[in-house]
Image 1 (cartoon, rainbow, N blue to C red):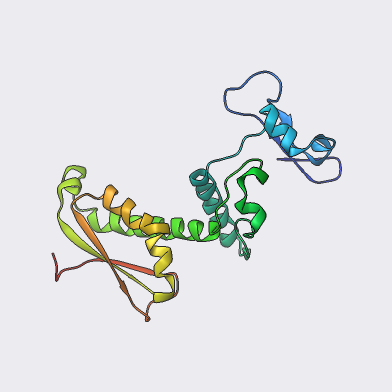
Image 2: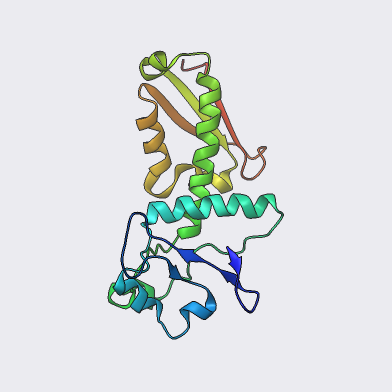
Amino acid sequence: ASRGQRGEPSFQYQAGGCSGTGCGQDLSPDGARGQSLGQMVSRGALFSLGLDQSVDLVKEMYKILTRANVTVIRMGLQASEMMEDSSLVLAGPWHPAFGHLVFSALVYDQVRDQVCQILEPFDEICRTNLETHILLGIHPRFESRLRGDKNYNLIKLKNAYPGISFSIQTDESLLEGQVDVRKDLARA
């Protein structure tokens, strides 16, 4: 991003592989004046991301901001009747618990990284045939983030690691947001 005439960030948007009008659209404040975002979307100059892509993007942005000690107070739009009416939403994903989806994705990454460390001694072939049980410990307040929306994180873990069963154990002694991933020797 460069700086526009008034010092605002200036962005050039280039849709992957497109040619013709709308490509390289100037999205600086000066370039966007006189155009509605709706017009730009209908011309194909802008497109919206899907929900999963948006969650992944915001997850990475959240990591960047928190590393820079910036407090993030909201991710996503406030739920309202208007947002529930799809005829009033022009483009883009919306979820009433978008922030929760982002936090769940962050916890999933944390769990996946720890599971990889546990399984590291095994080669790729053994991992897919390994039968073991992994216990996921988490502070009770954060169990829903670990599970994910509709147990999405647990389903992803089961699909990523066939033959491995996962269970959750809440533990108030863990820090909020901390996940303790370990092999469950009692069930191994």
